[in-house]
Amino acid sequence: MPIKSKNQISANFSLSSMTDIVFLLLIFFMLTSNFVTPSALPVNLPSSKGTSLEMTKMTVTVTSDLRCYFNDDEVGFDRLERAMAAELRGQEGLVTLHIDKSVPHEYFMKVAGICAANKAKVSVAAQPE
Image (cartoon, rainbow, N blue to C red; front, side, top):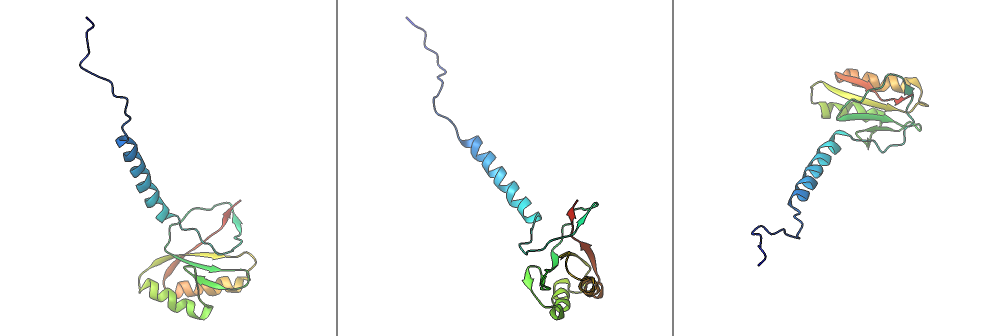
């Protein structure tokens, strides 16, 4: 008479641990996607040796055809100061400048002056060499 074991091996596969991993990955990617906000505007950035990634909420982009964008919304140079003041609300902030390398320096100085008038710190975006 054969002896039967009380512990039987189940042929079913448990998916509970797999769903835990999927949810953890989903949470991870949702959190990290908020930190990286690439700009979809066509800007040919200048290159630099010492580049670092700065996390900012405000960006000013000047394209090669001299269009000015504040946080991916097109504004003119005349409305940029009001839009930035409304966003800052009198507090200090960090503004990243995405300025095309073919744009004359006078526009860079104009945008930097607007940032200084609003007491915002300026970070200039560049591509690594």
